[in-house]
Structures are given as C-alpha cells and as structure tokens.
Image (tube, rainbow, N blue to C red; front, side, top):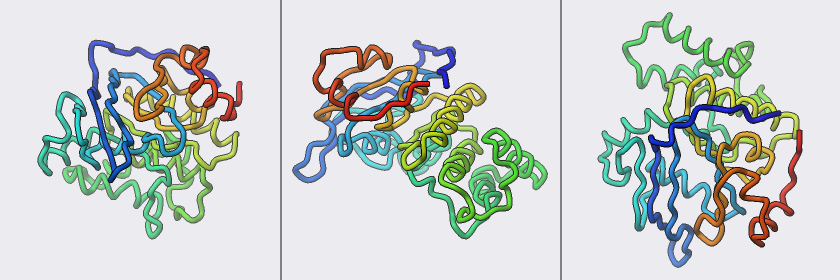
Length: 259
C-alpha cells in the first residue's frame, strides 16, 4: 500500500473555506475554520468523534448552512445558491455516505442506473449500460451487477457506493468515513480504490476519517480538527511528527497499519 504521486494544481482551489462557524443550540461545533482543496488533491480531515468532521462536508455539499463564514465550491458560494443552482452544483460533487446509502429494493445495476436516468436523460439504453459496466469494472465488481445490496459484503457495498457517485463523473469526491466498520484487508482495498479514483477520474477529494491508515495512504495533505478549528495541517508526517499534545494523543489512541 503506497500513496502514488499526483499532479496538484495549487493555483486552482476547487473548494475554499474561510471563517466557517456552525453551532447547534448551545454547542459550538466549528469555530472559524479555513481550508482549501486544490484541483487533483486528496485532503484528509481527521478528528475525534463529535469534532465536526461530518458537519464540515455537509456544509460543503449545501446540506447545512453556516452560521458565519463562507464555503465556495468551484468558485460559487454554496449558501447563496438557490435550489436549482444548488442541484446543478451537486452534479459536480460525489458524496459517499458512511453507510453507502444503496437502495435495498434495487439491484446493483438499478442503483447505478437511477442517477443516470434522472440526470442524463439524453443517454440511450446502450450508453447507460456501457457507463454502468465501465464504472463497475473500475471498482472491480462487474460480476455483481445483478445482485441485491443484501447479498453484498460491507466492502462490496462501499465499492458500489463509490461507483454510484462516479457514474455522473463528479469533479469533487466527499468521502464520509470510507473505511468505517471494515476489516483491515478490506480497508486496504478501499484505500487502494480511493487512490485509483483520484488517478483515473482526476478527482479532488475531501476524506473524512478517524482511520490513521486511511489518512496516511490516501492523503496528499492532512488536517486535524480539535476544539472547532484545524489544529495542525500538512503532510501526514508533518502533522504527527510533533510535540503537539492533541496530535500526539490522537495518534497514540488510533491504530495504524504500516505497509
């Protein structure tokens, strides 16, 4: 398992976050966060449970509105978009939910066909089938095309979830705990797939996780959340080769598999 080098355009921020704040009732979750995601880059956001990681990507996707600050995605300020504009922006974003969010009553093929038919109505039956076959081949599960989600393992469901986000060829991928609940071998497979997606589809990604192995082998850059802000930011080594007590305790608490 090794993170391959990629071309990152640091003159082109596809996500730009400034002064982001979000509270729920009396609980302050995010308190003045700044972050850029550059074109072609994987940024891993690390933090303890309840630190606001999932809140952050929901704000990026426009599923929540910030109390203060701005979130710009491909130059558009998300909170200022109307419903139609937000729907258009979301076509550029692939969102992998922690639970994969597959429709249990649909086959794998039908799960992938649904967003295509809804958003690319000009496609012929042949073109739809070709796109489904291609994306399933890219995640290594073409043989599962006619299976129901209940027949899939946890790792296979993650792969199909990734395939469904890729079917619309998004510019940006948002991964919410992509290795959660998986055994170490399957985690390694998902880590490899995330890197393959970055290479094959030229995506820019925000990867939310508390998994240090995932962070080390997928992240071009790592940002550690603590107390509502980014405490440390840089390469994996820069973040965790430190005397910072928060970074050290997070590293010591979490298990990492070195390959």
